[in-house]
Image 1 (tube, rainbow, N blue to C red):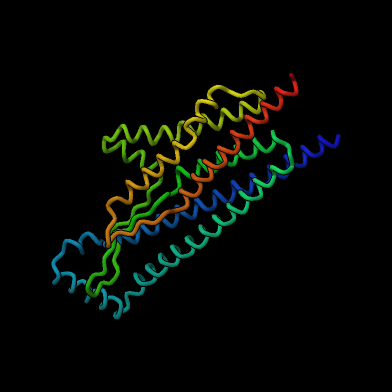
Image 2: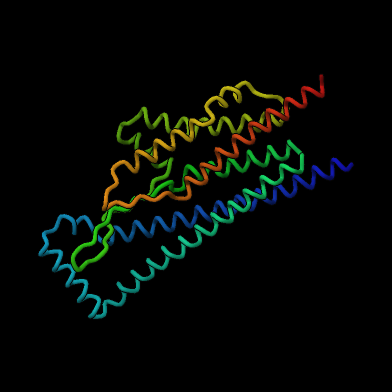
Length: 278
């Protein structure tokens, strides 16, 4: 009876934590989408490519035009710009806050290990890994800004790009880099899904699957692929390019950690069951 109560209590606490983890992950992703949308809109409104290609006389004329527009009450444009900047700041703050909450719930989930109910812990951790993986491939792992300080115009963004794993796979495929696209897709999408459901099946049937042992040999390949991806994205950066790591990288990293822990505990749990039967 005590064992049942302990299992039920652990399961209840774990499910609450999973729901909270899913909620903060969703909110963090939502704010990242709004942030990226507003940043892209600002870059487009700057029409920086025209500035870049224009002669210096046109840039100076443009600068005076902006000054004249500012002085002679183009209030609507000014308010729209300020509103956009405010939206960017607010969503950046909220995105960072929800990322902190995510890591708080990650730590609490890992502490459920000490309740010593292996099946509940494995189910919880592998579910957390699935949530982290989903956000990790969709959310930006990096943002790239191309900018320059122009005469009278000031700091101007020429281009803003948000790079997620999924978007990068699609881009690689579209530019006919099929081998790289397939490799990235295999180790960041296909194998994680197979690994996750293999662990679910393992704890349900209380037996280790051969595919888990096979995939375990490639447990760090997904990290290697993302490292190559980040190296490729930052390869062409210079003094006018700013590349920053984003939340997608943290979520994908936590997926890898969760997955390794869940696989290890699942193997040990199945081994203990076999020993008791023997």
